[in-house]
Amino acid sequence: MLFAVFLLQSMNPLDIEGVWWTRGGNAQVEIEETGSSVRGTIIWTSAAAEVAAGRMVKKDDLPDVYRIGKVLFEDYDRGADRWENGTIYSLEDGKAYASSLRRVDEETLAVEGCLGIFCRTQLFTRASDDEIERLQLVRSAAVLVERPAP
Image (cartoon, rainbow, N blue to C red; front, top):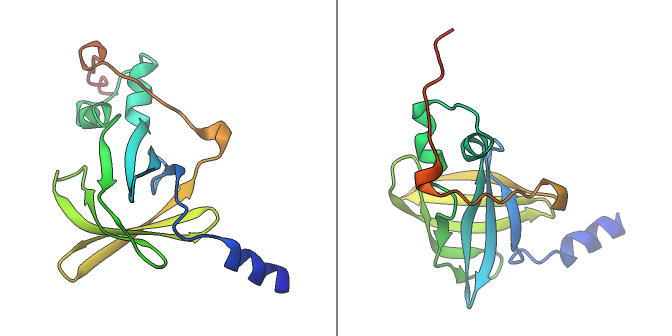
């Protein structure tokens, strides 16, 4: 029990640098400290990986291809136990929302986005070294085709 308490106290909740899986495991976000803030950039998505491998994907997946290198969140202030007052960008609607980031434990990051008083939290999971993928796609080289109907 004492060992578990020590581990809990030794984890710095502001230490969030590294690569994290988004909820659902369809993207990886690399978080880096940038001066007095942090920034999260998309380095891999499942749809982009399909295109890079030469596989056909649905036209509905087109936006995923262009997300590599996109900043997902930025401009946070260092709080006592979280990064706060930052901005998270919704990839679904393209809008920016108020956000905070905090470590739940060694392997889990809570990412909160708010619109006024309404907030939603998603849990990201730390990617292990052998799971980290990086894709560099050139827009003109990525050709998407509709999957044929069965």
